[in-house]
Length: 202
Image (cartoon, rainbow, N blue to C red; front, side, top):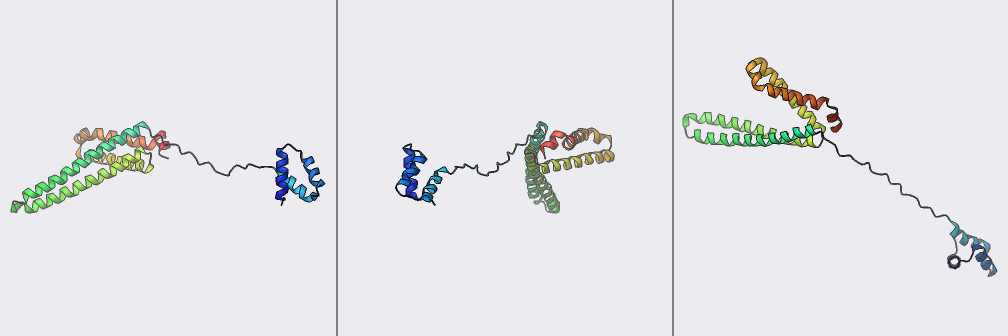
């Protein structure tokens, strides 16, 4: 380890622009050992290294670009959610009112109980679907694949239901529900086969 006194002397001498050779001669002349002089001089000859910290850059996450048609589907989904909430609440309220009035007639008490139970079940189911529809629509906007998969499943269910209805109820049902079948088919095909959709929902 270099002698602090020598280091201070050499530092002051270098500041005063005295060469290292002259400093060595001066120190040798006053009796300092060569080994200590060399240690002190080497202290100033050590290279200074500036190492860059080993920090791995964090990967930049690119925001998912959801196709415009998917955004439109999500908006319609939010609209459907609002309509379902309104329908479910109306059914629950109507069931309660019907039960209240029919209960006043003893002969209709059993019927009022059944109607109230049905309205509760149907209204509650509609409200439950409204909650699911809300999260599905939000998932579509955020490019979440589970929302796309659920939308496709419901699309297949709508297509199957429409086809079964046409077979069982005839052409009149097709005229009434043909538009719904066509739209469900287009949406399902788009969500399953579109390259842009697949890329956005990876």
